[in-house]
Image (cartoon, rainbow, N blue to C red):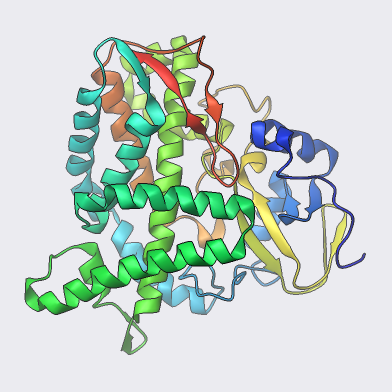
Length: 384
């Protein structure tokens, strides 16, 4: 096969951008490993995604010339950094953050109009993601709006495939984090006892983490958290508004929320894709890929694969949770999965407990988000 085969599809076509999930469903059946000029090779089936996740020798995470700690690393380098970050997402840390999360969620629910329409994404979901991430990192509320604008610029640069713009946006974030680190270094013992300060004391081997490594860690945590948490809140609220019986059931029995949240986010993934690169000649899904071929794992398709999830659009609480790739699998399983699950459970508990009904606005159709985002760009709901 040639290095650059003829494209099988266009991820930035109008049809794909208007409805990513439907497009990926179609590709999974028609061309499960497909080439495009924009995403290179895309893998749509659950079995093929799992194969890539389990074989990091053939499908490497080192996809960028810039360090990505530890997402863009393979063992053994990945192992040491992963051991550093896992305690930050451990049970004690998640439990300690839960009251803060509940306070933020309760405050945002309280601000919703009583018996009125709300644009949920800008008026609730994004605010929740921004506030909880800043609370987790120890950043002041004054950073909320800067981060909101930065996420928008990052999304636009990624969709455009503009490398210069992407590099400029990344540099802007790097400067932001380095400034926070400098403030904490200058404060010395008076620096706030928060996650950002604690990273300054972490060691890899017998040396302290350098600024480049800390910035990379924080960028991975922040970009992932802000985008996927906001998308998840919108997806969950929309699904409950569209399924009144399920909404009623969850109001009556909130203990079902953890499993229900995972299942809803399986049906409509808040994370579209992640990347890998081949290290050698390999055949997958009937396609022959040379070494150094870039791959996009399409989570939003794999989690809807009919071969694993019978009738994938059907909401079911009895599915095998080990097959759900909401937080990935293998050595790169999301370290913040427990934190994200707590945040989503708490915000939905508060939303359901402090309201009587969440309904769609038939005259105002939701606007789906476009790649690389998922969920909704805008979502008008009636809440009372």
